[in-house]
Image (cartoon, rainbow, N blue to C red; front, side):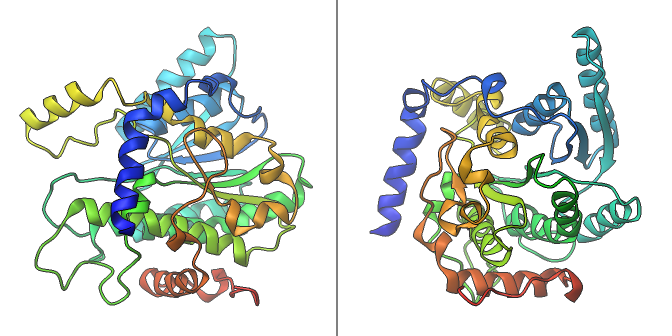
Length: 350
């Protein structure tokens, strides 16, 4: 019954989202300035990631394009730089290699960041996959591909960069926003929890990429809520998960060509553009909304999730389960071999 209810809610959201979002401002009018902020955007070379990075550049932030392909990253950097120059601005951005499906790549990225003692105001965990209809695949560490790429990689990246975020928040005395934004999906509501005995679908004969995707997105929101429980309320960092909406991207590229064409033809009238999909990320990264700025209140787990309308919303009940949050945290730390100095103990109330 819970799964059926979630399916109905997701279906209604997809087909009525444009109607529900008709009064949400355009991307350029969402949130607040980001001048002087250093921002990391993972997966910036397509779709929502490109629009997120471009918007932060236009708001005079220094943007790090953290991507797998140096060639694609440099192409985007050049494009955004030339756009800024034409508009009379001096864009500040750089390309750094990062593959969130590889723990070694994440460790190298974080190590370099630490060694340079760089500030960090915004970490936007945007990169992810949905291998729609594809067979089971694994990351180089042996994780189920969706869980490894969409959740475990961003978990490690977040934890390794958290000291930089906390130090930045402390030094700027809360004058600039310091944020962690995890790009999740309303599809997390379709996941009936996380199978603690088989998180990677290893014991199941049949495999569903949709079920794997949903589970990985639920894990993102569970982690977001648990991180908020563990961080002090006055640390100056707002941590959120966002649902960008159903966006017309290349998510169907793993399907046969005919099915890709059919999907784009039938879904285009209902899907959001990448710019519309980036609104919730930009809002949670830059807005001075009291839920995101007030000490203590900003760290309530119930306020961890924002919908495509840029409003605080209720995630799946599983997402706010403190017992699941504690289990997932320990399991994740074990999976990625998180160094003890980067771990955060559970709060007494969780």
